[in-house]
Structure formats: structure tokens, C-alpha cells
Length: 304
Length: 304
Image (tube, rainbow over all chains, first blue to last red; front, side):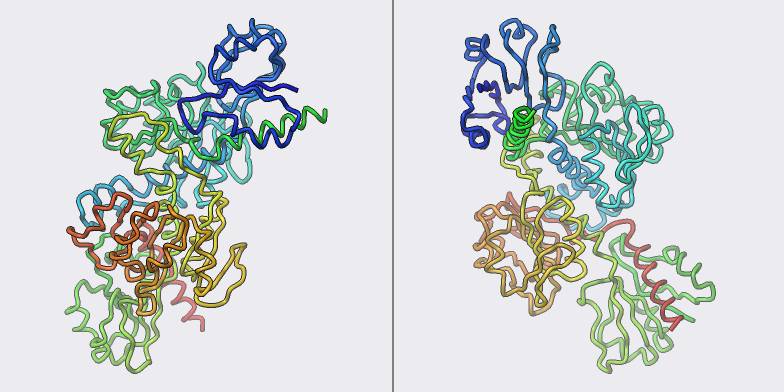
């Protein structure tokens, strides 16, 4: 069996080299692994490729890959693998992101909730002001609404719920209960948002989520609500954040509507906004977790 | 029944006024509550006081309080209520701090572990550097050693353990297991510390804990270990932190050996040290939690 990879990246945490596939080679000693580090190298071999691990797959590549059977990509988001015009190629997305992103989201929640920006100012001032945090309330006594309640949103809810916080998941359909968490639908948002102390977006990036969290929806929340975006930037735009910034406690944005966010964006200047560079999955475990998922997938294919 | 209070404070979160005792008055409608806002007012009434809620009780006050039966204090630490020379007065300390301090400690762990100082620099630079966090590892895959494993330390362990992290509690005696957490004794520290990715101190402040975490013990930890102090500053002194700063990943200190930490302390200048002003219990819930504990105590006294 032969497996090709196109998993180079400018981001070290996401840049797979031959060494990163050690566990895969051990699990499948006869596997012929071909690690490409640029598109030309891949395209020169494309005609024979049946199994591919890749970050991206432009539509034009399908014509060069007549034998392609399966694409596996680490990404959970559907952004970078074009649809196969012939609908013959299986596309398998990574499903391992939940625990990493949940830890990043919990970090963000606690950072905002316990007034860490004020504590950083206290430190910078070399002060000892014990009244700066007086408005802190236990996250465990608050209500966290997670919009986008698939596999990743549910992982957020499970981790955040361990603090004691009430978690309400919101998704397109199928309201009910899940692991002790209330599940509501998008049409329930006007009822749900007034209870929210924290609203976390984990929506996929497609046209249906453009401008999802509007200023009107945000104004249904409590004054002082905290907003978080760990999905895609199209759902909470720069214009929206600028418009509501004075009405909210703050926003923690791991994604923005333009990435990289330009250095002259006004978002950087808002005192109650914290921006991280789409880094909620940047952990040393990332590459090993994907390789473990590839191994499981190949094992199940081999058995079937 | 009459109950006096000496619970004024410069810290708003800890400054009890009459309004804060509403639940107590409701629970005991016939209770005569006398809220003092300074020592002179209390001392003028001291001769008749049997029940007292107070932050502090200097030894000299015992002579003025011949009828004193019970002192209740919100503080968990034994620092501010002098011992009764006659050993007649019952002193009841607050036991409600665990969940608050645990949330503060988890905030600190995630702040250090997910390289938030680098993310703050990225934000200040208006950059989008996705390689700054590349050394982050999931807290859930790491080992957290909690030194001081009484009620509060155990609350830390229970919350931190929900991330998946291995928690090892260290206390004076009684090794074993507790709620799935390994418990070791102080004499085991040379064996335990080499596994630690994070070491959290929650020790009480008395002579037995002076200079507890020495540079020699810290050097048994992995290079890059993170240290946290949520107990008392005497256990991890300024001199020690200055000595080991280059060998550790960083330190998050909620307490320091001198408080308030003077503005000219070198601790403020260390780039990998974050200091908060002994604020791990500063939550809006603090006063209500203490009053709820007073109610429970009075109810049990009334029943017995």
C-alpha cells in the first residue's frame, strides 16, 4: 500500500515531516509513505496516488489524480478540500480537535471571567489593588451558551460544565438534552441569549453562517456578556464587534473575518478584545493525534 | 440571641455591611445583629459579646470579652485570630474557599500553560504569529503536583483533574488515594517533583512552612516547570523565585513573602512571573458564601 502526504505548513505545529509518521510506519511496516513538501512534487506523482493525507486539495487537482480513492485531512473545517466533481473520492476530516480546542476555550473563558486584563494592568503598574477584580463571579455559577454544538462544541460543553457552569448548546436541529447539557436550536436563540453570561461560537465557515451573530442578537444578551469565537471569523465580523464593543464585557477572538488580521485593524485597539492568531489547536499533541486517527482509519479499512 | 460583627475591610469583596446579612436575618428573625465598622465601636460593646464574626482578633481583645463563646471568621488561614489564653473560646474558620480558589488556580494554570504571555505580546505587536504557542502541551496530558492537600488543595485537584491531568497531592501524612488522586507525603517530594509539570503551593502560613519550596527542591523538577503559590508567601520567597527564575517555565504568584509587594520588588520585573494581589478569593460570591456558612453553623448550634 502507498500513502502520499501533502502536509507542509508555515505553522510548525501543523507541519508534518517524515519523523511525524513514525507511529504510522510502526503500525503498517509495509506501508510505502511518500512525504511531499511542495505541490510540484505531489503533482509529479499524482497520477498514481490512491491515498492522500493533505491540508488542501484544489478542485483542479482532481483531474490529475485519476486513481484517487481517499483524502484524509487533519482539518475539521470543510474550508480547504474542494468537492470532487465526480463524487468518487472519499474525504475524511479530522475528529480529534475537541479536547484541544476545549482547553483553549476554557483558558479564554477563565481569562475573561476572572478579569485577567485588569490583573495584567495591576502587574504593569506594580500595584496591589485588591478591588480591581471585585466584579468577578464564579464561572461555575454562570450560564455558557455554545453556538455550534457538533463534536467540538460538545467537547467544549463537557469541559466547561465541570466547573459547575450551566451549559446550553445551540445547533440547527435536534433540541433536547445531551450529557446533562440543554440543547436548543438556532430559532430558540432569542429565548436563550438573555440568560447567557458567555456566548461561544464554534460554527463552521460557510455561507449559512455569514454574519451569524448580529448586533441585534448580541443586544439580547445581558449587558456585560462575554463573546468568544473559536469557529470561523465570518460568523462574528469585525464590524459587528466594533459596533457592540461598548455594550459587552469583552470578546476573545481566536478567529477573525480576515486572517491574518491586518495590523491596522481597529479590532486590535479595543481595550476589551483579546485576539489570538487562530491558534486554538496549536498544541504539541496535534500531529500525533492526527497520525493516531489515520492509523485507526487504515486499520478499520484493512479489516473491512 | 445577639451576634456582633467586625467584618470591615479595605477590600470591597471582603467588606461586610448590614445588607450582606440579609439571609442571616431571614433565617433567624429574632437575631439581634450588631454590625461594627471599627474597633472602637466593637470594644465599647465587647463586655457583652458572646458571638462574634470577625476578620481579626488580637490577643488583647480577649481580656475585654469575658462572655465571648464563639468567634467565626471568614478566613481559612489561621493568621489573624490570636489564640485564646484561656482556651475557652471556640474559633470557627471558613471552609467555603475551595471552589473559588480552585477556579482561580485553574485560570492561572491555563494562563501559563497555553502561553498567554506570548499571546499578549502577539496582540500588542498586532502580529499573527502562529508559531509562538508551538510549545504548548495539553494540560490534560500533564502532571500537576499540589503541595498542601487539605480541603482547599483537594478542591484544586478535583477541578484540575477534570481536564484529564494527573494530580498528585502532597501533605504531611496519610499517603494513599483520594477521589482518584494519588496522595503522597512531604518526605516523598524528591520522588514526586521530577514528574511535575506544574507545582501548586496551597500551604498554610506558619513557621513550619517558611522557605518550604527551596531552590534545591525546585531544581528536582523538570526544566521549564511552572510554579504557583496560592497559599502563603512564606513558602516560596522572593529570593527563591529570583534564584530559580531562569530554570523554570514561569511562576504565577497570588501571594508573596511581603504583602503588598513593594513596587520596587525585583519580582515585578521578571518576564516569566505573573503576580496577582492575593486575590484568589475575590469573587462576588464570597460574602454570601460566608453568611450561608454562618447560618448552617448557627442552625447546628441551635439544634444541638
